Image (cartoon, rainbow, N blue to C red; front, top):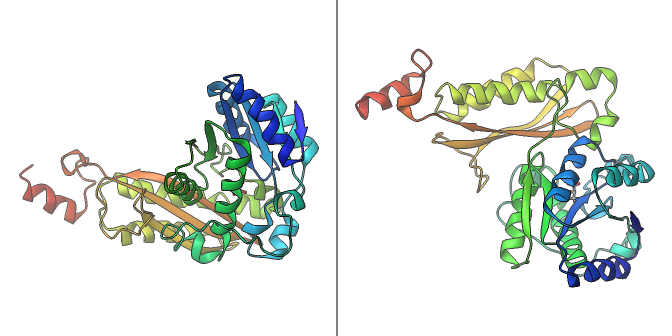
Length: 308
Ligand code: PAF
């Protein structure tokens, strides 16, 4: 396991690997690694010849200085976990190595229009420009065949896919399923900042997503009803302040009114002082597949219209 801090050293080390015909997998992280990151690294190790994990708390993607300061930093433990999960390189650069003029903003940044207008993009101005910029730089430095990102940050995954497509970057973006605690809470480096009461309250996010998905599964076609089901579940928990509870198209991330086929349910909420996000896929069954007694009136009307 090599711990590298300099960009030139990382690029040179991975260039040697590529020249020898070895496939490089990249797992970009901000450290405070947990079992979710571990699953990304293990997947990368199973699909590539060599895995590089980046550990960099990217100041460009924080819209609040307090959030940046409070972000957990655990490099020694991160290196040990990356090593155990099958990584060969950990790249942990100082800020000046990534952004030489810091704190002055870099002259060149990457902006992905459209997808970043909503949800996290409107709640955290500038966040996705920071993510898109650092991910583009990390891909340029490492030159991986594949890069691995968790679906927990579903909008981020869409933004990364879009920038890779638009900039013709020669890398395959691999989205990996969210890893959850036994009680449903999605793993996040931010969970370590929850008090015991907040940690208990945070499980409502997954319950709300499940409530939304259950209503879609039962044939609900009105996205407003699904949003209401999620909001009602979240409303039971006084420690939680909802930012958004949305039903969106899984590709464009545009909010939908009428649910046809697959949608993505996305939530953001503050649990005490900690902002958490989570999401879940939901698929409305075709009208003929809605179980008897579970279809809403519109679904029944639909079914009648198409003669089933
Ligand atoms: O998901 C994260 O941890 C970060 O947003 C990423 C992709 C490493 C960019 O800083």
